[in-house]
Image 1 (tube, rainbow, N blue to C red):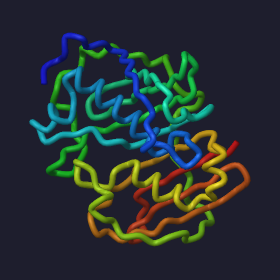
Image 2: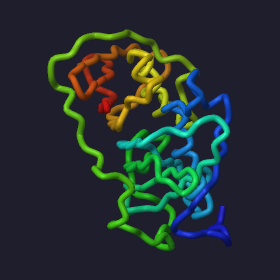
Image 3: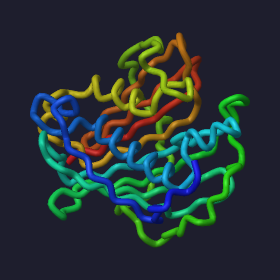
Image 4: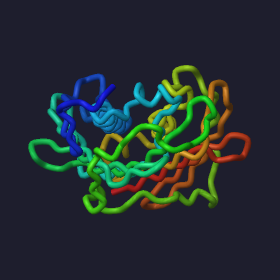
Length: 246
């Protein structure tokens, strides 16, 4: 699609939180929070002419490589939230995008995301084939207090769960959807911590693809203020998640 007439380098989009997105406590699930952030990023890329459909003409797609989310509080069922997004950097095969969620003018969530251009046929990263110079960049406007980092998962850990990848875990790029990794790990957390909104921030590193019927092991390392999960296939780490507690 061509660049939309209403294109702007900073996009604000409203979403109403519905009951299918909420946990039993009536507040937005962490997984659905990530879905809303990703859908807002997709909406911005669509009006900017670098959407999934645009990129598929060149067998390309944006894939998430790293993501950090800092949470003051979660919205609840019926809230109207505004998600604001802009790009910190965009060059060749990679982009850093910022996102914020607001309710009634109050910022409640900030996120920094790192995206890579991925060839869906060769399954390799490559330079973006579409023009992008019309996006104004805002390198100094950060949405989080801390930037994303490389999670240290090379320490003592226990096997928490073994799993096989099913069709329902895959997305349109034919690999495990980024939110599925988060869902698998949060299912292993004490539910009281989730329902009482004890997560202060979380960070995800996506390292290697997982595909249909892959058999994986979920590892867990728990300390006082953080929990680190890693997911491995044949002893190689595909994903890491760090949860920081209030």
